[in-house]
Amino acid sequence: MTLQEKLTKWANETAAAYHKLAKEDKSCNKPFYTQSNLAKLDKSPELLILGINPADKFNCEYDHPIDENGYKGQIQNEKWGIPNGMTGESLLKGNPFEQEKNKWKIWPPIEKLFNMSGQSYMLEEGNYAYSNMILYATKNAKVIPSKALDLLPHSFELIDALSPRFILCLGKDNVVNKFRNNIIDIKEIITDKMWIGKYNQSIVIGLEHPSNRRGGWNKHYDEYSQALKEIIEQNK
Image (cartoon, rainbow, N blue to C red; front, side):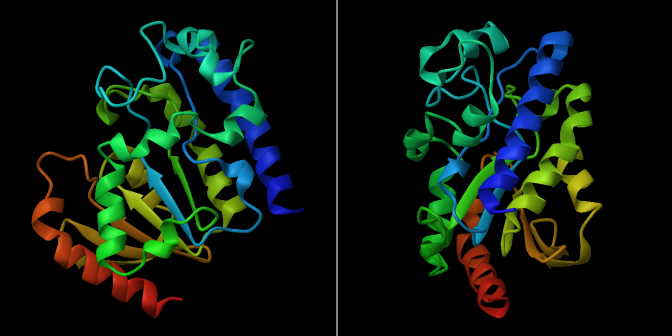
């Protein structure tokens, strides 16, 4: 199968599973989506940026894909183009608001990190993909519905289909730990801040989430960027 055939199969199955749970379980009545446009990829990306889950507009004034009506609000929002609910095709195309990512709290720090490390080419179109472990949007990761965790296998399937050379895994929580349990050869690079491991053929770089107010991105850019540069150059 080609990459797009694998991704189309993944998107159809994942959209159906998330749609079903959003309709059947009140706690999961939430919008869901990937971030970057996966339909544009014609080869495995160099980099997969993997967050925990999307943040909704009540937590992020810069992002406005949804409203208080949850999944119904997403369906009714014409910008999503899903009048009958999420489809595999729409899920594959990602977040229609992605062009505004420079306003997101998460993206400028990532750009700065890769610029400082001399690896900015990895954020060029076609070289990266950006998604989340859980696709439902919530105010923050602490309120991800427990039922949503049943859908984590779909994220592993996406990673397997993309087969990126590097995975930047952001955050430290229960969801990330479930992914980390499948990673081998884990080694701490910066204590409690940054680690490295291997998932199948991908090099995984774990880093604290840039939106973590208690975190140290602003204090540790030099340290993070130097470590990132060394990891990438040693594993090309």
